[in-house]
Length: 450
Image 1 (cartoon, rainbow, N blue to C red):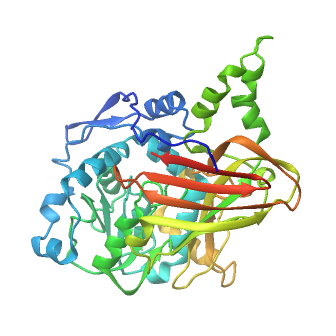
Image 2 (cartoon, helix red, strand yellow):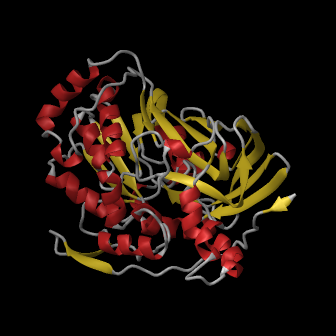
């Protein structure tokens, strides 16, 4: 059995981005990382998105005093913490700190909001479910800038609890104030596992998905909110998620990163090939491919029902696969992507009106817009997909490149198994163990998504 590579497990160091100082209305200076720093860092680290770069970085926490925020400490009920088993061991807090600091960067949120496929899907899903949201209580898990909370308020929610443990919550509070929604939306700075909102909720909305769906492990926070606060039969948006994988060919990418070294200005540099393969493909790559790169129908790695999934079943996910190549090509690796669906009560799909986030109509027009959109189609479910054949998103696809391509013919069978397991050093990271074989080749690929 061949082995692609064993990871050492040591965390790489990365440059810290400089912080810009923003003077807020209350006269408090708050350090918030600039988008330019994030984009620059993404290039330095070879990461295709600001969200990916931010996960490599850490920031000192912001001062939330004077912003009308409800801090975690003041919201925690000791009895609630006992009853619900709030997770707060020291080591886990340290891991969380770096994660939440990364999401204080404005560039991360700019990238996500500018992702029209993502933001339009959430906006449309919220207005598709106005009957379930109107005059109800909503919790937004990981609210970020508060945009989804505001959509819920525009959809008629009586109360929205916008919870985020990142210091971007400071800015979310200002956004809420600027839109005159402070009576409806309460921004809470703290971890879902530790705060208490002292009432049951009708709806949970959250954009929890990471690269290859499970990276960053935010779904457990949604599960915690569900188990603590959601009323029986309550709505969760999104309601379901599915992670897929398929073998791919990508000769251009392989040539750019690897074959380049075979002949450089007439010099034989093939001695560089082993190092080039390790540097280029040791870790998963977040990048975009097209449907033409995909060699077979995808297999399902994990299907998630957000109303039933448990935290324990996310710790290790494994599946076997057997696919047939649809063409003669070089097998260069395996791509993963995901779909989420916004089903549940009054589940319908409709076409977006086509506005970009900055073109959205004023709050007074949202109810009529939602009504018109919901009438367009029948009982279908709205889907947000990151598949190669769909509109590109900031999640792109996650690629596990193999070091030595395998030549496959049409209908040649590719079999194997893949296991995704949360790492011991940090449950937000993923150990990836891929076994694959085709023809007379049988190999193992081991990597860490960190």
